[in-house]
Each structure stands twice: as C-alpha cells, then as structure tokens.
Length: 308
Image (cartoon, rainbow, N blue to C red; front, side, top):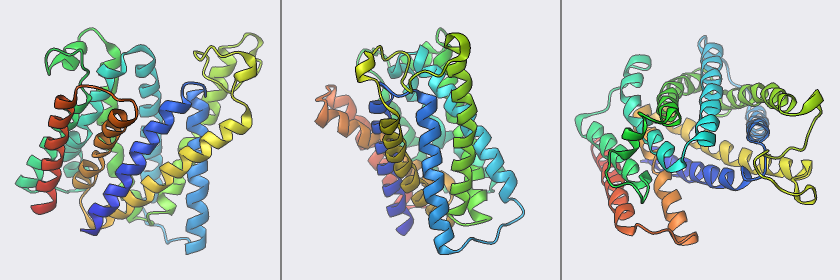
C-alpha cells in the first residue's frame, strides 16, 4: 500500500496548499501568487531532477506537458473568476466531482478502469466530500446544484472539476514518459510562465496609464503602510511552491504503481483535512453534517484500499 501512503502525503500537501492560499489571497494578487508559486515549484523540481539525473524522454512527453499546462491555466483562471463572483460555499462543492469525472476520462485516455468495489468507493468519497462542502445555510443537499441555474460561477467550478479530470491523465502520461520530478517540473514552469504575462496584463489594464502597482489583491483595501512588499510575495510564492512540490512528487510517484482514479480519489481526502482544520482552528459548527461526510469518505477510501 505504498501508493496509498504517497496519496496521503499528497492529500496533506494539497490541504496545506488551499489553507495557505486562503491566507495569502487576502492581500496578494492571485495571478502574482499563482505565477510565483508555480515557478518556485518548477525550479525546485528541476533542481531535484538534475541532481538525480535527467530522464530519457518518451515521444508523448512534450504533448502531455503542453496539454496539462494549458488545461491547468484555464482551470485556475476559471476558479479565480468563480470565487470572485460566487459564494465559496456554493462554488467549492463542485470540485468534489473530479474523481467521478476521472472514471470516464481515465478509461478514455489511459485505458484504466477501477473494479466494481473501487468504483463504489470513488462514488462514496465524492458524496462524502460533497456533504462536507455544503454550507450550513443549505436546507437541501441539492442546493448547490439549484444554484447553478442562477450562478454562472457555480457552473464554472463544475467545468473546473471536469478540466482537472482531463488534466490528470496528461499528468500521468508525462510521468510515464519521463519521471515524477522532471515531468512535474516542466509542467509547473509552463504554468508559472503563463501567469507572468497574465498578471502583467491585468495589472496594466486595471491601472490608469499602465503603471505598475503593488503586488496586492485590489480588493484587499489595505493602507499603503500595510501592503505586501515584494519580499513577502516571494516568501508566499516559496511556501506555496514547496507545497505544490510535495504534492506533485508524491502523487506523480503514486501514478507509477496505481491507476489515476484511485490516486485522485484518495488525494481528495484533503477535503477532510481542511474541514478538520476549520473545526479545530476556527471552531466551525455543523459537527453532525461534517462527521457524516467524513465517515463516508473514510468508508469509500477503505473500499478502494481493500478491493482495488
């Protein structure tokens, strides 16, 4: 079960990534944070890969990293737009459906099919993570879906869940045509490089005369004395980059020995970690609902681990 241990590490890093981003996005411009985080991760992974010896590249490596980088850039942009216009309690539950979409996309791109018990486990994890993410004010479990009718942002997040389910397949193809370090390094560098002109264009567009403003989120409304300096932005990017690196290496290594739907389903346990963090640190309520979702996720993971 070494692959499951790697997935658990990836889930912890993924949870840390969202928790840290939630903190930094209060002040740091999201495009700047994305660029610095992915560039830091790509640089670290490239150094590690060079130290281990650069791998021989397979014929599908370049198409795979180009495809996954492009998909991840679009998914990140859609996520930022959705979270800027939509209640996070309505938008986030949609991401829970990535493992479910992955059952179909992995069969199409990788020829990987989970067992009947494994499929049930994936579905149970999706249901559990959905329950965890529904907001306290929701009176019905279908409320986030009902919100899709009146909220384009929720529809965008469902599209993001599907995009990630497609990108995961190209991530694995890149790993199988290189190694867990070099493939991730090139992908992260491409994503980070793509966000540099995006960040520059948005900052120019939002300021008269295209003058360069501070590297902070325009909605932060902070006084000049408390605005984030470039050193702090670099520190945020380094921390985010380290978390991305840990997640990428552990998940990419797990891809080598297990099918992608199982890997991502176990990685989705990061939602459970985030919920526990919110409960213990921020003393969030709705313990019964959260406990129900947590039990479902653990049961689904057990099915995958016991009957792969």
